[in-house]
Image (tube, rainbow, N blue to C red; front, side):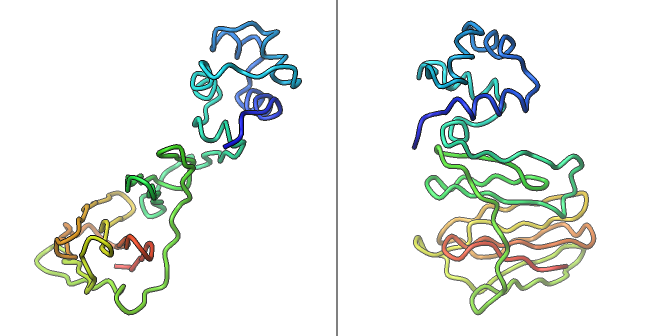
Length: 193
């Protein structure tokens, strides 16, 4: 991981609409110090780097890598749901659209649905006002479904799955939407309902 550059600090500061003085006040340094950072004549102290990232509206990993994504989703729609899964701890982040998220110091990419294939076919049955969702999928400690989700334009129902459980869930039927299934090895799958 590289260290933050002056050009990144300047770009992020300007994107936030801050003057050097406003940024300096938010991290308790002088505006001359911010000027030195931006002109490459100095670097922020490691002790304030977390506060600097927060003031600039990015994660620490984004600030250090110089790679960040702007959240452009102004009006959410549950059918545009995105999933981000940390490869280190397995944490799952769901958002109503694309965004910039990190976990364990890693900038997470949005998962893209794969084409259904053998072993990854989502089966949905309409039963008494519910969707019964299942997959014929391994559920051992090395290969399993991590979660099942039912998303409509106004609701999301999320079921976390663990190894040695059944690869199934029941969801209250709420209209047309998508069923998502996430395999820990092969990624995300989606089916229209």
